[in-house]
Image (cartoon, rainbow, N blue to C red; front, side, top):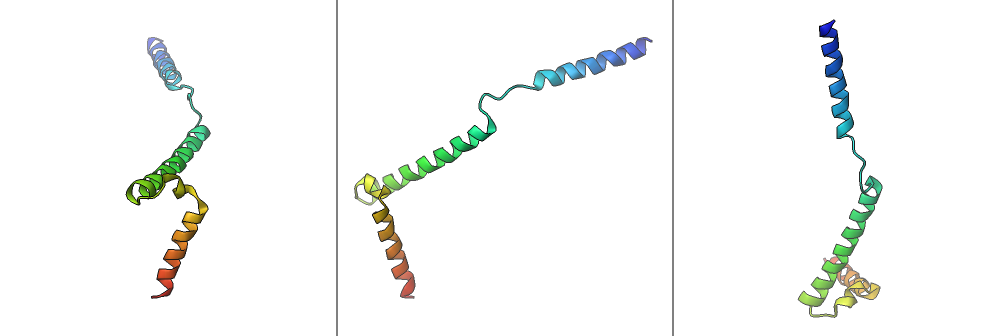
Length: 83
């Protein structure tokens, strides 16, 4: 009987340890994914502004204008057609 009781105590201790490990997440997974995507978009925009404004001697906010990107695409397409 003591051996059976000992085994029961061991299994109870294991289940208690498992219960202690479970914890509720403060930030749900879906919200973490959204936060990461938003941070990636923001960092890309900031990088474009720094590159265009700081390194390219232009106005930083011009890096966000569609006309600037269209001009860049036109330059790239022009260079590829001449090959």
